[in-house]
Image (cartoon, rainbow, N blue to C red; front, side, top):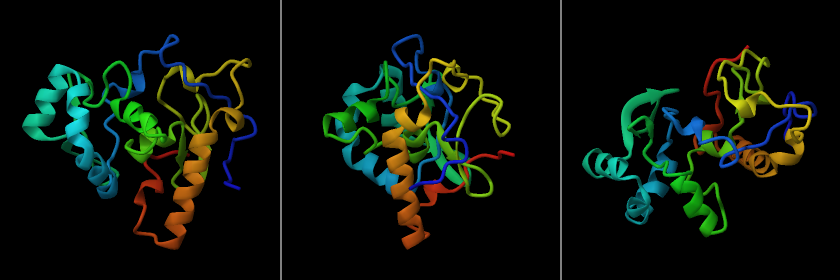
Length: 184
């Protein structure tokens, strides 16, 4: 089983559409690894009609990848302050869900959220006040009524476990499980 430092005490529930408008997609600029970019590029023609008009214009003119880099990797572009794939929710999530795998097209950083690795390579659930978390999102500041992360993050935990296994088998296959930001 995947070892997550604070899994037994962390609480998390995505409240998108129930008080959250998708703020994590606003200027988030997640890194996109080559294998992820290839998956999106192969289906881009089906995603384009689903994009916001300003995002579609940006993607058609300049592509969906930015010149900006995060963790040494290119990031998704932003249009009008939002990820180009955000349109009342994540277009990549919706497309994957329709095919039976909501995480299929999403960059690993997005698909794993709120899980991440710290600089020591240890998994953690991002929480306000834990390990120097600085992103002030309501979902990262749960109440005692919020479900335990071990119950609410089954898909994310399974993905993290799979990515770790792939990374151990071939370290160059999935750099997306490496630490993506500095934590204490």
